[in-house]
Image 1: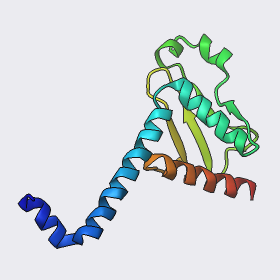
Image 2: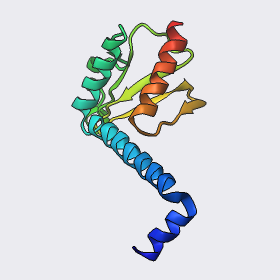
Image 3: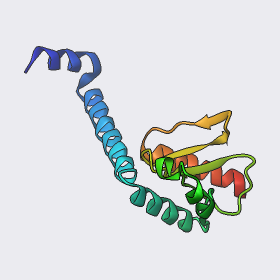
Length: 137
């Protein structure tokens, strides 16, 4: 057995070390699941639509694409942002940005001054569920 492994076992114990490794495996799978969803604009949009549908909600595009496409900058940025339909813009929100010039990503929070970060798939889902509860409860 290597000296490093012996030192880790001495420090954390065999069971403690096993728990830490199991946690890292779960975290890695969680990050991979989110990365798979955000792999493309299509997969991110499909996941968000399905997630909202599962909660009895629908989504719509924040930007009027007919107007956006007339803008000469559209092809450069291709603004597209999905949000949960029929929610006013006050209070908690969830946006899925699908701009042509960037990777798909979620923006969520109480306001632009109080945005929330998320770490992995389960954290994202938990925070979206918190927002849904605040908006519908």
